[in-house]
Image (cartoon, rainbow, N blue to C red):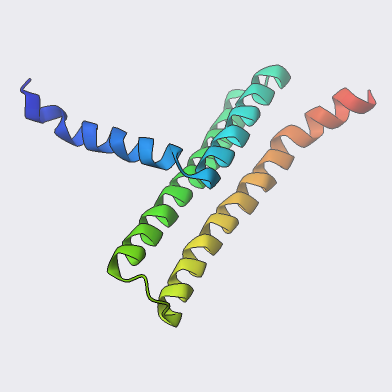
Amino acid sequence: MKKWDFIGLRFALSGLFILLQQRNFRIEALVALLAIVLGFYLQINAQAWLWISLAITLVLVGEAINTAIELTLDRIGRDFHPTTKRAKDIAAGAVVLCCLHAAIIGFVVFGPKLWALLFA
């Protein structure tokens, strides 16, 4: 393999580093880590792991896309424009939808096990 074969990977890792500097992404990553720890503690099955991993990925990718949109729009112009605001609000709303979906998955997967653990 040649050096330039890894240039794309280096750019992608740089992007992940940039994401880790974003407060919302760090919060979502922390919640994801808590979900993973809870999954191990509750010994969820393979199907539940698939749902949890899908939810985590959906939220983190949604936040990444939202961040990319916001940075791009900021680069285009810093002056207030109602269309720019709407685009940013829509991107942020998409992340909220991802988080709501993840929360529903969390309740479905963890809810019964936590209920049984707490009230058994």
